[in-house]
Image (tube, rainbow, N blue to C red; front, side, top):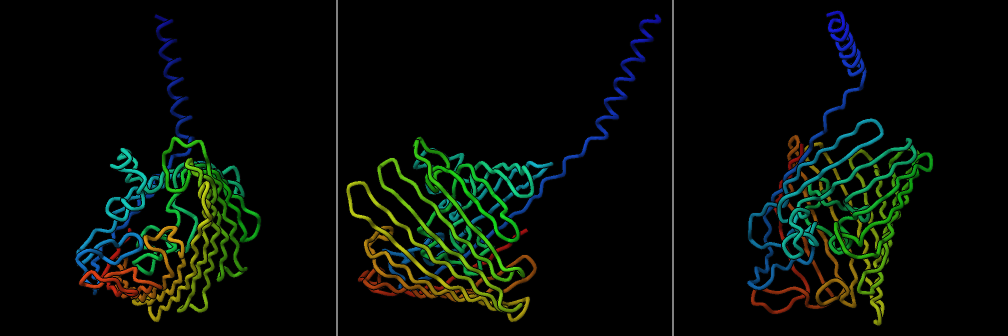
Length: 353
């Protein structure tokens, strides 16, 4: 009987100690849940029956109301570790993950925009592994983060994502370096033994009003072609009502046993916000693809896009007009004959939470 009483006291004490220990452990914070929805209507005034006259990403429709993308994102951190899961559904998400889906039998990956885990060894060094949106370019895949709704040529024909391992290194002050190794850009899964290098050097003025990014991606495909891309992004705040952005990029391709090909582009973004309710963005872009490296017929393209931003809380209405020009007949008239220019209008709405 005494032995039973002793064991009862022992286990009660052990349980009390364990509970006391648990109560001293830091509680894991709840994940942060965010999301967005964007919808749009696009009309190209040529109203061709055989072409929507849209050579850039995410707005490939004509005279149709469309769901761009519905996104849901969860971020969680605990101690030095963190993780992000970012899912997208809709035509924009489908184009973003164009290497996954029915054509490649990777349906489970097609809706994964981003999924990665990170570990911060210190406030100056962090490693991340997984899939993340590209570091190259001025524009972003989520519509609510852009002031223009339609995308530039440079964004459309550059990379969308990388899957691999990267290191973020603080170099002191406002200067940082990112270096990494990944699958060939846009491939969340691959049997290729070849890996690509990615990098970004960023800095800013002391007041943070001007920011500068020098970006790189490069590697070789299994079929032998080499690809190198160099990219520059500059953003500047002139006043509290006016800001500017610049993006310049060049992509160099060397197919095995063939002549080198390349495309390059340059764009400026002028942003005016006369009030908290209303803003305007004018984008002017020149895109050269003389050898038809990425566009169907090649040529020199120039597009001008004017977008309004009407804000009501988390809702933004974006009325937009866009004029595309090409050095040859890259577009179609209503009767199907070729033309060197085309004019489109978009009415879009984005909501983020």
